[in-house]
Length: 214
Length: 192
Image (tube, rainbow over all chains, first blue to last red; front, side, top):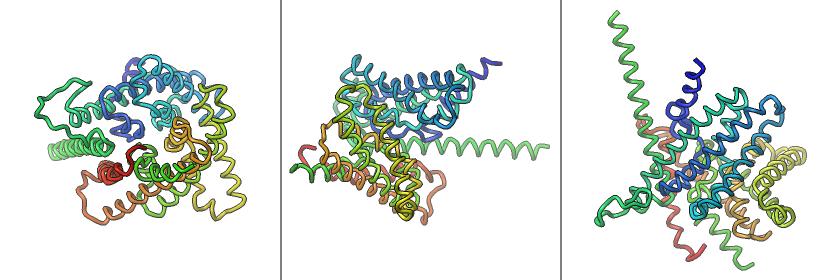
């Protein structure tokens, strides 16, 4: 029973309530760093660390944080983790850190993270909060990766820096420039809308068939 | 001092905060459904950006040289509390101004455009006046992008659009086309 609940919290973040595709949260870092798959994954990992770390801490301290100043407390906790992530990336992968630049500190302003603390971690026990954070962060990582991969393949003809096409491929440069971010995410959301649309239609058909059957 | 106009134009058009740095997208997509609201939000954001530039300069000059690793926490706490304080001041001194932008102030205090401004200004080592001009350019650029998108969305409201594409998907594609138009300014300088 308990395991089922943890699994449920995990999977909802990955697919049904995917932070990017379903809730359209955390867009700012999302679009800015997804011009290549490597950057996207690095950003996703950093966000993963910050989200899971702060959910754990917020949920552990949820009975001690006074209600009136909770938002400030959450922000200070998040900012601490972001600072750790920033310095860690600088030490381990200075090249990626340089490319991501100001967007690592900006994780702190990602509405996804604060949103999870307010909506989930401050109300539920630690284990569930961590599962929820892992799910949401995985969903975010997947979304970042798919966007980064599409943009890198179309805009550079490569994935993780490995060339995929022959020399005849003409790179679609606009995809790695800022407009490409807006357009790609727009098209992916369109696809998600279509999927939801079809699903609703299907469910209606099933309901209709059941009614006429009886 | 002679690079001030370039900083302004660069922040306003070439490196527009919304359309090339993707900062402040949440209000950009969330509030841009009417022209009037977005103009007011733009005004409020420009104002907060000016306050931020001053705060960031003070912190960088007097506090953070001793403890650079506290940068992020300091920025957030100081900017948020200064904006809160000024909000109370405006409420007392000018109710008309408060009505025009009051409700937006708490919303945008820790928005990524605001924090991004502080971090960019720090990374580039801007002085006091450079920071102010940069904030002004970025704020007006944000307002410009917001008002343009709001105008386009008001037009789109009147035309018949397939149900599938309505909503965020369409707004993102409109923003993409706007951003493409702003890329035209990229050749304005050889170095930014």
